[in-house]
Length: 160
Image (tube, rainbow, N blue to C red; front, side):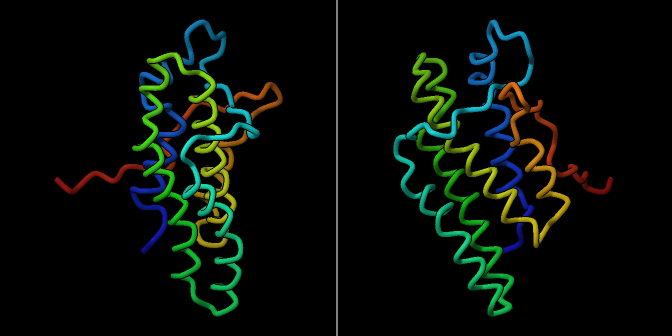
């Protein structure tokens, strides 16, 4: 399974954009158009599978690379993206934003931000340029705010 496909790109877009209404809800009254970076210490609900994928990745990647098994190493990174996408579908952060459940929303977005940061870190040996773009988009500035979202990978239009 190759990395950089729709799964990791979709995850980053979903997490960074806050899925539309969630982002709008978090922006109301904000002076900057960038979404605030979630706190890294929040405890996210129902995130055990995502936490496990992030925690298991370094050892799985190292072991696979020791065996020169690049597919298995990239699968460990892909697992983080898959689990994060499932987590978005389970937690529905846009609904949390609408319901005003800000502490839970912050915890969910924190878990997703940490997953995206892990993807950026672990993608470096496979897709260094994409990993650098992910890392840039998932690194808060001195004020703790994330940069505005930009497409991770260019959209390729089908031939006319």
